[in-house]
Amino acid sequence: MKRRPDFLRLSAVIIVILGVGYLYQNLFSPKSIPDFLKLAVIETPENILILGTDITFDSETGRSTYEVGRSDTIMLLHYEPLRRRINILSIPRDSYVEIPGYYYTKINAAFVFGGIDLAKKTVSNITGVKIDKHIIINTQGLKKLVDLLGGVPVDVEKDMYYVDRAQDLHINLKKGCQKLSGKQAEGYIRFRHDAEGDIGRIARQQNFFKSLTKSLSTPQAFFKSPFIIGLILKNIKSSLSLKEFIIFANTMRQSNLNEINTMSLPGIPSNNEAGSVWLIDQNELKRIISEYF
Image 1 (cartoon, rainbow, N blue to C red):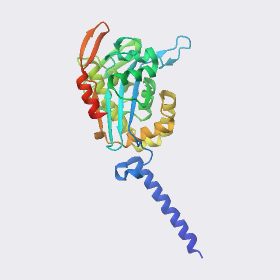
Image 2: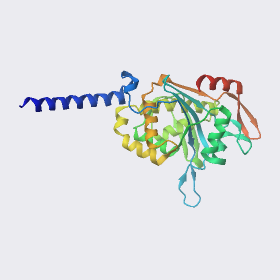
Image 3: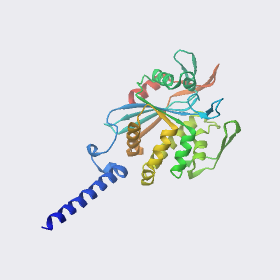
Image 4: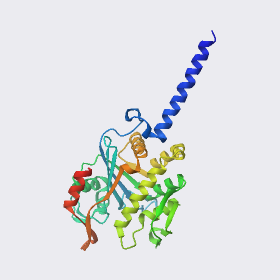
């Protein structure tokens, strides 16, 4: 009579062990399990516009707001689940484009003129890509996320020094592999005061994005997930629901860095009535969209 309870207890232990093993494989070794057994990943192709905004302040309350700032970082992300491929097109903020309902000027003004809707429409017009979702990130949220992760390892390609007291921006980085704090990470992705200008900054943003994705895939990050979700709710605005955002983050986390293709909007630097601008190479852009989007 005692054998049946023992058998049930043993079965329960085995089920728990298998469940824990399944969860662990999904979280930290997703490549080792079949696609149909994976948890919470994007199953259909999606185009997501990612904007990083500078910080502005409400004149009455003095509180920071990123609903009226210019978009410092503009990325169009395309995910193909069948090919397990993530393609990211970075768009220089000085790209000279026609903003619907306004005039030709730098693309980062679109967010100021008409918020996320006009920014999406502008990017969609120049690329021909239908944008399904958007994510808006402010600088403070990014800094807090990096600090919560204990820093993000980055190979800084050269010494960087720049001070802008008006923006409270103090950049002082040395060349070499190192773990950047939130403040240092902000400096790294915003630095553009060299011969490469905004194009060099885009390359750094893409490099940092990959390092951040890798840091978010660690067991340590998983155990901090409740705090990460709290940061997301306070510092990121998105058309994705919380559930969709978690699925998106999990998809990114499960992706191999070799499966993330990064590219920049093709063009050449120039000057006109809008100042220093980036003139788009339309033929090369069409080729990129056809191949990667």
